[in-house]
Picture 1 (cartoon, rainbow, N blue to C red):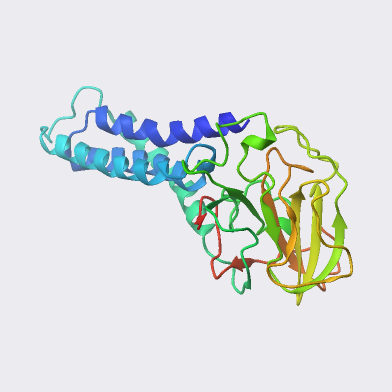
Picture 2 (tube, one colour; picture 1 turned 135 degrees about the vertical axis):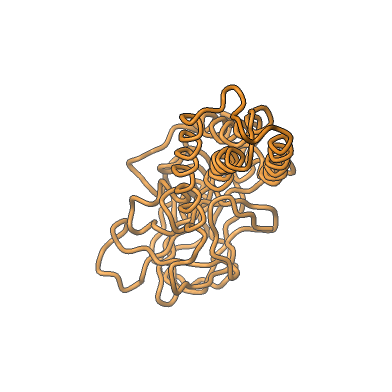
Length: 303
């Protein structure tokens, strides 16, 4: 599945660029329609595609390529006769381009909306060690946070992965060994000062691509920090260093990233709910958080 997501993202980004380079366009009207369609599809892939599966550094390269393709299409259009459509440019094609631009324009709007914090947030420390990290999914919209969106408690949850020097979260797109994932066994620290409310530390770390839907959070720690309860999920079996009822300080070692629970690969799940919520997780309303002042969204990079 991860390989499929990666290929769909790359195809949706590159195919419109290649099409803009090769397509026949005459006049400003045709250029605007073609450019809107190509830019909408590529921008959608840039915003909601899981680039950590490939390399987060491909996004700016692809953006530059898109701008170059738009400029080239404009130049070629200006060289053509504007009074007559060239072969292959029809009203039906023009209408199709506008339809594609409209549909994927809505995707772009959702992707941009996901980057806007929903009102008041609570700031926490970043819970991982020095390094380069990416948000695999997160934000304030369906398309930037698709799997969390259906659980009220996880509405603003984050999935964080560590990156290697190539901007990928693993050696390859979907390796079969846990040790091939950069995040695996990375240390997790408390993002706040508070009290440990709950600990689970005995669930196995399963192979990549084999989630355990019976234990959604896997090995995890619940922290009560002021008005919030913070969940740190998918920890490695036997790695948790705190016990229920003990106080924790900011930055204190809590455990290590594993692959336990309902996850396809190693990452750290972070989410928050109001401490005084009458509902239990995962039905309690999620609380939006920032990490070191940033409201993080899918594909954001933290250094």
